[in-house]
Length: 399
Figure 1 (cartoon, rainbow, N blue to C red):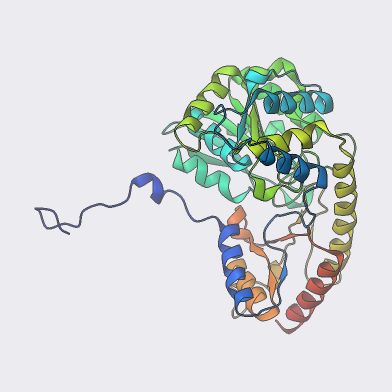
Figure 2 (cartoon, one colour):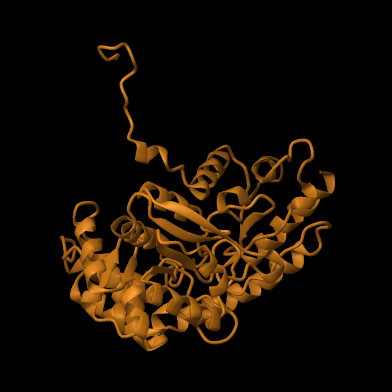
């Protein structure tokens, strides 16, 4: 319908035009279409543990449902779940948060989204290392913020240093977003580098948003969290998830730890969007956090074997190189040797051909801010890795 001046009425807001559909979700949707048509895919696409949620966590949810814990709760989560979050973090990392400095969210992504929405305003700059998880850029832009990219060196395993961060700081810098171990490259910020960045941000009055979704999936040395540096607590926000740690992706269980005013603002925003997370999910989260962590140890040990298996297989494909992930469950191989050819001008086309011709699901590097890589999740069975790599070898041999 036209306006009085004859021009087309505006339908959508500017902010929805600042974001794109999640690349990993788009890949998942396309893969689902092919499966429905009978394709036998090897799925290295979505970052989802191949393990089942541990039995004791499922039992806790079933018991909660049977006892009618199915009603609304306090928006920020019941006191028991917030206490479980801060106790687990204090036990593992030496942090000193209180339950009113915690909010339980519908997945880790919501924690990130809410944090950015309450901290970042129009024109604020947010420093973001490259490669980055697909949603960071869009979430920042949705809030009206300006993304300032911190380029990293593949030869140094995409290392992030305080010196590199400091060079990008301006009077408009409001926040820094870090993800360690990282998605997509599995890079881990060295403890010394992390401490320097935390202190730098604190001294400059800049908020440090630390996505610790994969914090328990570190392979080298002791586990490290930005929450360990308690003297800088005023400017640190820990954004976490139970999804990867406990194989609970579909449960949508996330959290944030941070200064009371920020947590209160995030809870206020959540009160007008999702409200509380399902009560029985909170009960399951308590069981996950308070029970033995042996299941986490076992899953991490298998991820390490899977990592070594997929790296060995990629090394057998001529022209492909890959950094060695120090955590998470992704590899980020450089496929530049195969780009620029007919039907493979970029990683978007290459990933599409891998999907339709080799029936192997991958994610193009453009989604993560680089142009020479594809991402593979090795949170799959050992047999799937063998089969998927065989298909990839055959595919690249013909390219």
